Amino acid sequence: MNFASDNIVGASEQVLRALIEANSGPLPAYGDDPLTREIETRLGEIFEREVAVFLCATGTGANALALSALVPPWGLCVCHRESHVIDDECGAPEFFMHAAKLAGLPGTGARLAPETLETWLAELSPSVKQMPPKALSLSQLTECGTAYGRDEIAALSAIAHRNGMKVHMDGARFANALVSLGCTPAQMTWQAGIDVLTFGATKNGCLAAEAIVFFDPADAQAMPWLRKRGGHTLSKGRLLAAQFKGYLADDHWRDNARHANAMAQRLAEGLVARGMRLAWERAGNEVFVIMTQPRAEALRAKGCAFHPWSPANLAPENALAADEGIFRLVTSFATGPDMVDAFLAQVDETK
Image (cartoon, rainbow, N blue to C red; front, side):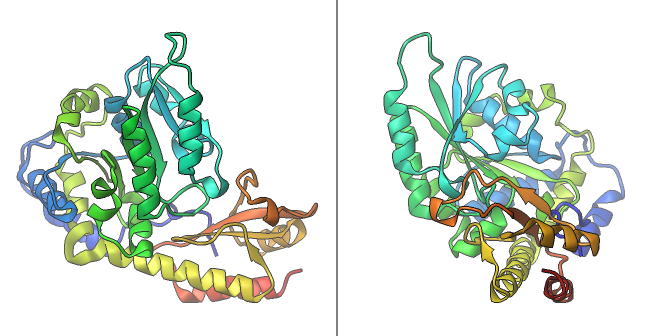
């Protein structure tokens, strides 16, 4: 009963079949192949506009490269103080931005409020002693499993654009947020003001495949050199494209996310029915449950895997008792209802 992450499972059968099909015979290297062109065209269709697409193998690389295209070394990228780019990338964005800084702002549930961003920008000194803000990065889903609604994205993007900033979306769990909100990819991105998206696929069925999607190709002019210089231009680039071919075909990517979200809903409802409370409202495939430390230890002793989480972004009315903690449980496209029910049965046996 491993709910540690959606990274712990392998690839889906459909993605693996696409890889096998693309494996035979010679094709041009370094992404200069017809399969890569096909995926670039397909992503343009999905997002309903011309896009510039750059495939890479890791989310860390995709986020860092995307931000490096938006932020010069003397600039700031504004994000939530516990967003993935500032808290979990080992300094990769700053490294790829050549010492540009990430500025983290507070917000309940790891979401930035428009008024928080506007106030912070208004108070930022325009002096040459201060690095100027050049980009805003939003995580969708956030590090607390919450989602930005379309109106929230539009409001934050409008503030950023008024202040001369570009807007990046870290979409490691983009598909989970999308099916939860019930909107189109276009509505959740460029139509709401997003300039560049890190379109995640690894957590939702691929082996190792991410796409950096620029909604204005002019913003991507330096990306071929940035990606190559950063070591993220794969010689056998067709194998990245092949994963996306299987992932995007027949709405497979949405189906995977719907299933993972449904399993998370089943899990959340089961925990709440047992008298437990959630730290934040579930918006995708992550459940953040508040339980006592002894109960968490007892579940781990029974072989259940999950991670403790920071209470820094809790709403004041949901504060923890002295013996309580927050624990993250993540479902995936491969999580079955039997696994969820088995975990809930173990919860019944602990106190």
